Length: 413
Image (tube, rainbow, N blue to C red; front, top):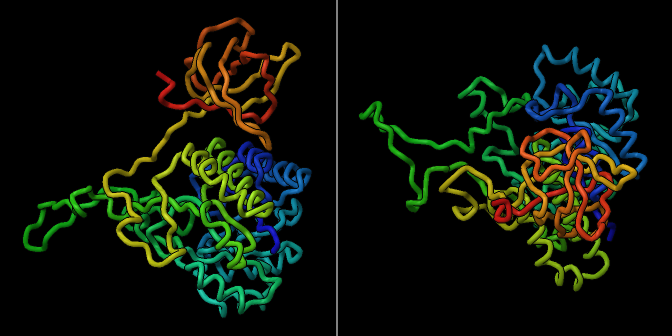
């Protein structure tokens, strides 16, 4: 069995570098236009070029999303965009629209094309259709079960890859093709401007009682009737490998560097452990689950993989995330005095116990012994976000660039 690719999201250049360093084999990103995450920071062409060079230096790949449902007035811009991408050489384009696909084949035929989940890819005939047009990979619709994916694998060419979402937020709409956002706010989810109306609270109105809003209750637990739990398949890696999935995809181009690092590192460990020994993988499951739960999440579900989701796959009482840890910052550099410098995200103080996440190394828990402001003056705490702060740790523990600092919320008080 070939080890599957671990594909992580990145909404910025910084997060791309974090994803690669913390274990992703490939990263998918969006440009300033024509991608389905318009609210993400996204990439300028200059950042995209730097990100691709960084990934390639670390033996990782970069895929660029161009998966909007394109209207007539999008096409000229897409032509120009693909001409620019031709020069920066991403490893693949992720596309859903046949017209956009046709332009990509004409303008940059040397770049591979992956078919987005937005194209509703639910049967092997669809996969084979895209293969005949020149695609090298198709992203499965989230509505497919493990059994269906296994059947797909048996009925498509060996060199046509299957990419499947294995972790992250679930969408109420079929293959993510949502109309609610456009209807309520005029912001088109299929052109990258989703307002996430599936997380809102809803009421119903009876026809003969206009103006009387009735809350929608399910088992008296609340009213968030479209609010799915998050997908998590880390406990089911053997099933996904046996189904023939080539790329394990993590959702989340709107997520923080902390989230992406945590998910990439944990799935990297789980995949590598499984391919070392299934016994090791099973033995370390409590560790994986503990690490995954340190990220922000909305409880977990296996989605459609083992049958149609039922009421247990929804969150009914709130639309907020579970957040156990606060993000403190990412080490930028370490000076000749061994002071580690970073841009502070949340408050902490000298004497606090924090956790250090490190690429390809075990995490460590330690106390902050010294702290400095941007001028090098000693301080006791750092109360203002987005300022440069330097720290040293007890025991002369040294930090390195791209180490991530976080603190358990119960220990913030």
